[in-house]
Image 1: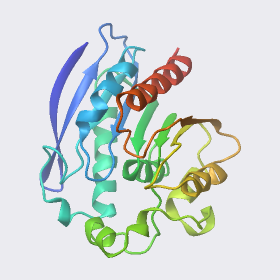
Image 2: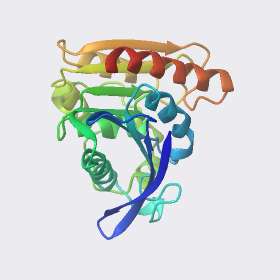
Image 3: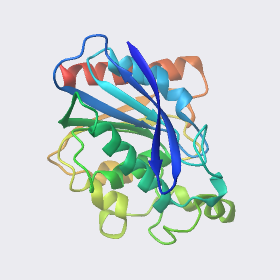
Length: 242
């Protein structure tokens, strides 16, 4: 496996990330972008990326601006800014020489899951994985996310939204490809109803898989829960890619 650190320019700043290549590359290979959650970073996604790369995909993990080693102060960025990061990272991955643009996937968690849902309305995603996705109201999309969370933590755990009145749910209501949603049984951040909103919104033509990690909290704190998620990803991508 080849690993390469990268810098991706966006709006005069740099997103830092890591490209991972399988040992044996074909002329064209599927590719997967991995997007972390709010106030997290790419580090936790590298083991997950490696598990996917073993099945022949090229992977890219990133730090959204204000996170990890990427440029910027977290306090300054809105969902609009981080959606721009997500689109830019997707396009960067798609531009890699040996990537099959018809077989692009995204793996994401929490805040990243919300961003990925919206991304699906802007770019073609063949394999979508949402783990414990957050759900925000549409208003204040260009207001720094940190200030919204400080004002009211319920901002990211909406339980009474449907596709008709939410941009993320509306996007996945039109998504018709491979869809994996992974829920933490003891999630105290994004409650079960939030996940149910996503499941209810997803297009009936999508190939849906729903997994629950028993005993897990939102952030997958234990070694067992982290490994369970890796196992779920590996099994699902092995089936879809091969």
